[in-house]
Amino acid sequence: MADYLPHTDDEVEAMLAFLGLTSLDDLFAHIPAAVRLAAGAMGLPEGRSEPDVADEFAQFTRANRATASQLVCFAGGGAYDHEVPSVVRALASRSEFVTAYTPYQPEVAQGVLQALFEYQTLVSRLSGLPVANASLYDGATALVEALNLAGGATHRSTMVVSAGVHPHWRAVVRTFARGTGHRVVEAPLVDGVTDWSGADVDEAAAVVVAYPNYLGVIEDMAAARANATRLGGLFVVAGDPVAAGVLRTAGGWGADVFVGEGQPFGTALSFGGPYLGLFAVASEHVRRLPGRIVGETVDTNGRRAFVTTLRAREQDIRREKATSNVCTNQTLMAVTAAIQLGWLGTAGLRQVAVASATGAHALFDALTAVEGVTPLVTAPFFREFAIRLPRPADEVIATMASDGILAGLSVAALTGGPDLSVEGDPSNVLLVAVTERRTQLELDAYVDALRKAVR
Image 1 (tube, rainbow, N blue to C red):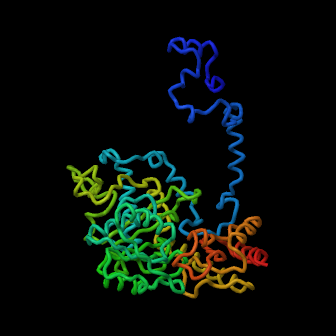
Image 2: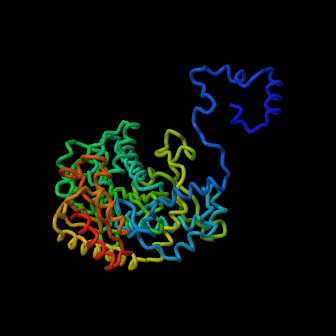
Image 3: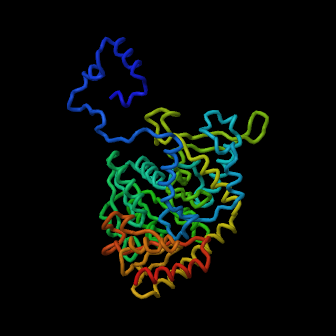
């Protein structure tokens, strides 16, 4: 073991003498021999310098291909390659935002609080609901908090969740339910649209629908709302916020709670995070809202001021009254989203949504004209769609990557196997997304590359 100690032999001997020991084996004699690791047993190489280690790890990172810069990205499934204007990057990277921390002393963080207040206002407008919080960790955990809110509001434990909700979000919900004792019932999809009759329950705390669902399909929101009313549960909408540029808001459909993933608004793909959880509610549920809300008031001199208010976590109120244990928010991503939305404005958001939808429908038509490629479903979609291929989707994705195109996502990889959202074998189902960044040349190149990949 002396080989691994950063000391000279004289120092080791001095240490042993001070301890009254004669060898290193005596030093470790209290450890059972069966669990002791002999010197050299791990086969570790000799130590290396810091620059050498950094160079080796740099070689590993070069094996990654960044989708936004090295591949033309047609992947979606909750994270999208949208345009991030330089003004958004410049403003969001200012030190007062990048270094912002939890505003425990709101009076000295007025700038950050005002930015969060504007963010809340924008999320409220996107959702069509009157109250939004200062953000949560991501879309999946926002959905968990929505179900937690619904359970507390109704004193029920059954949650009816559409199979059109992203498979990863549903997995997070199931994990949450194992700890809380909630019962999660999934309603299957039929031709891409939720079949609420497939969820055999008499009452529910919440009915959750994705809008659009993870296959890109625009759900029958009136049917979803009616099912929530029938079961006496809160109507929870897990929405794509970009869709608000062209579709009726969740609040317009009578939603009690809106949750969503805010990554499309200024946050890079970043290999999966950190992202941004959107959360808004109807007024009657404001006191169960997780996280924190930034409110507007006036100071003693009558000047506009901002404060944190209605915090529901147990650190701020009596434990028995707490409705959530969420104790922070995604300030930087929330401020970035506010800057992006402020830059776009209502007309700009609509342009992004229209361009994405137009490109997606044009690509869908071109791809389904390729021999052997068929639509997974026939229901209307927004900017994402699923197609069946004559080959496994994973193989097609790998082949097209060599042509510089990230073809999409394997539905089998997303679902982890058979799922109520896909009829039949999902292994040859490819999920394709289009954003406003994709040009006609890129759409044409995708069609040509896919045609070669499925031969």
